[in-house]
Amino acid sequence: MPSREENPLGGTGLAHRHDLDRSTGLEDVYEDAFEDAFENDFQEEEDRPTEVRTVLDETELDIIRRSIARGLGLERIPDPSKANISQAEYERAHREYLMKMQLSLGQPQTFRSKKRLHVFPATAYPGNESSQLSGARGSEREARSRHRLFFPVEIPEEDAVEHATLRLLLHGSVTEPRYARPTHLELLLHLRTFSGSRKLIARGRIELRDPRDSRWIELDATLATSSWFHHEPLELEFMVNGGPVRRAFSYPVLNVFTASSEYTTATRSKRSSPEELMSLHKGRRSKCKGEGKKCCRHELTVMFKDLKGFEFIVYPKTFDAGYCKGRCPPRYNPAHHHALLQSLLWKEDRKKVPKPCCAPSKLDQLMIVYFDEDDATQLKVSYWKNIQVLECACS
Image 1 (cartoon, helix red, strand yellow):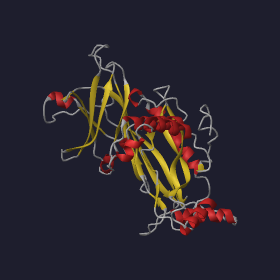
Image 2 (image 1 turned 90 degrees about the horizontal axis):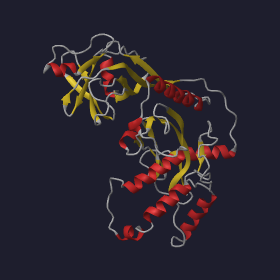
Image 3 (image 1 turned 120 degrees about the vertical axis):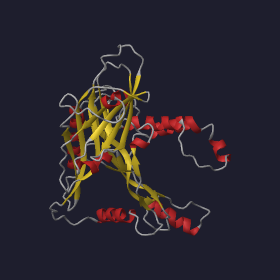
Image 4 (image 1 turned 30 degrees about the vertical axis):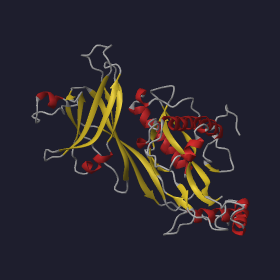
């Protein structure tokens, strides 16, 4: 077991796949936390009738937060509400992420996906040329709170849009005193069609602790994908306490993340050793096929925005964590010699030893972009170890 002072990220580099016989760096965190939280209540949980729980309590969330921080080498989880990331820093961090991602796929392949970041500044916005709505339905105050944004989006046909964000610099209010109480500003992003109708595609709410300070803000604009091909504008609206309010902003930019499938020239590989063939064999058997119910890897799509406590992760927005499930008949896909022996003993006497269970046999780390815990204007790119299941086996 590693010491508590050891940096779990030390020496990661590009060799990012791990077998389960290596330390994860989180054993002491999980052991201490779960022992403190559940030791006294263990008997109660056993005696309590089985019930389905859909929400984690605060104790469990705290355990998860502590383990995440330890896994990333952080002293604490960054506070997303204090982040103020410029567009330049946003681009720098994400391009670093994409470059490292491509390097990690450096081995020859016949087919792979290449991810790109496309940046499109708005061609019309307040301060550039007039985009404030005139003659809009409703009061003049409502018209002044709405702004149309046009983006000259051009994406290659072979690229598929994965995610898009609208980012802009919100200017501080010159009419409110510096020591006014915090203001909750709501941002509404609509898709404006040429027929005059509007469709709400994103909503954001931020707390401005000092209304006079400028701040970078971000909205999810992925649902606006269809409008780019019809050159339809986006409409941004500001509201406070349910009523429209006028706010100045600048540098609106649309960041579009795409993925395209590429064919690369594969080089002839040398003949694999028996150990390597066994590893490949296990990997193939780990994938679920058809209606079989034997031990295999299932897909598990995780969306960070839906998980409380993960808001500090900026990118990726989603990933396949995977999980293992299925039966483990005797001699089927053993993780090691002990598992094979255990399965044979179970077959001879089922009361003597338990049957092997389907469990992860190989894990991968996930590269992420996240807020710096010490500097609210910076992003970091690092690895979250042992978070993706690559292969399953009976153990």
